[in-house]
Image (cartoon, rainbow, N blue to C red; front, side, top):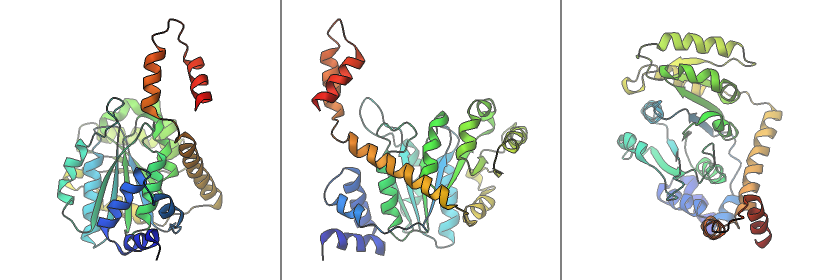
Length: 299
């Protein structure tokens, strides 16, 4: 049997050690990752939930509570936690994972962190590929957690079957500014830390904004660290999805566009780009547009 096919059969069986290795191969474009991706089955029936929202909204605590709900029912959960990449060290800031420490020893939970690699909304082509690998395994639920920064989290809508936008009562002033982007992507708003002052007022204001929109979006209140409101949220997660062919085509086109974009950019060495910028900046007549035109022509 071909190596990539035997690897895939182990992934399908739920061998998490092999799965972790495959994700590393895919993330770093190491052979036979291209063959593995090309032989993935279309697991459109696997449920992918996107969870986004501003830093400090308690997304990791909410993911933890959702995971507990599903594992208590003997379901298997995969979590792909996307962390903002530092532009200075090309690394990943993984502090939030500490909050999920209780899940690391759970045999029904698989957690993986991924740096955004500069994708504005936290969704890179690598995220798409890694989610598709997770869909090839034996999970009942796949959660993609990403930091929402303004309207750029719109990208997660093309990846997840359902997108949850997590806000806190203090988000009140922000919602008016970012409402158009949020309305486009949110399938559900969760007001977390709802035991804080102003939660009810914020929920009512959010309902008024939602009612002006084209689609009906539920607004749920949770206190994730006290497990309040989690049952209602998980019941909403399990509700069947109605996807039209048109939306399906649109989402696949978005995924394809991002993968194509990534492959076209593969030849651009970011470190060499920085070195050449460093050299070019010493010239008095430096112009970014001339520099880019020359760089593209040389590469």
